[in-house]
Amino acid sequence: MLRQDLLDLPARRRIYEFIRANPGVHFREVQRHLGLAVGQLDFHMNTLVKGEVLVRESISGEVNFYVRDKFSPDEKKALSILRREIPRGIVLFLLENPGANPGTVLEHFTFTSATLSYHLRRLEKAGILSADQQGRERNYSVKDPELMRSLLIMYRTSIFDMIIDRVP
Image (cartoon, rainbow, N blue to C red; front, top):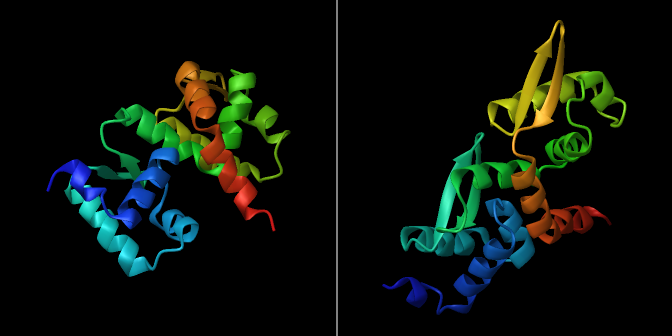
């Protein structure tokens, strides 16, 4: 079957269009948004992955879906992280305040220092943040600010729609 033939079915076309508009989306997000049965969605998504229309990537222990050939590995990793509220908030803060230390970051959020430490380590390990050690203090900056800004601008609708969708 050709790639285009796989999209002839309306359900597959809807899945494809949703993932194209929401790169890095999780299976359950697709299921909730499109209202498809889990088994039906699983069948169609597996068909689209096997047909090389979609890509299933496991990044930081989470499975995300993307349209094939649209994103570099760094972009996929960044999109996966930007879809999560706390890491996205930290990245946005550090884009505006490069070189901030954890105490400064924590002043602007309501989560605990343990939560901040956890996310800073994950963001650094993922290559999103860099840390500059000065004595006992670490100062954090976004490694590739231009990439982060462009992804936030390009996909702001899909990223922020998730927040709006959660509001009752």
